[in-house]
Length: 40
Image (cartoon, rainbow, N blue to C red; front, side, top):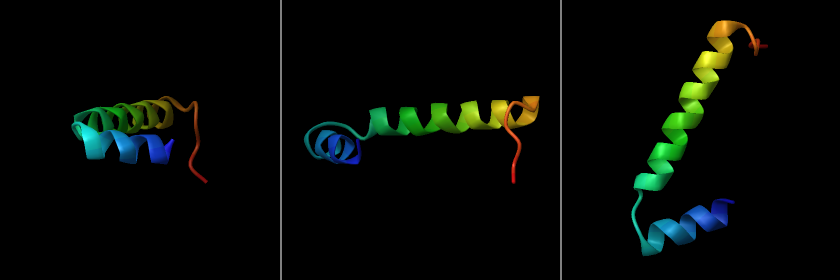
């Protein structure tokens, strides 16, 4: 997956990677705040 993103970034835009990371971070914050995930 990392190789795919590195290849994508070198040929196209960095924006899809930024969107992916923002969505992942938002999902993590929501799961932590609702108690679905617990920090160790």
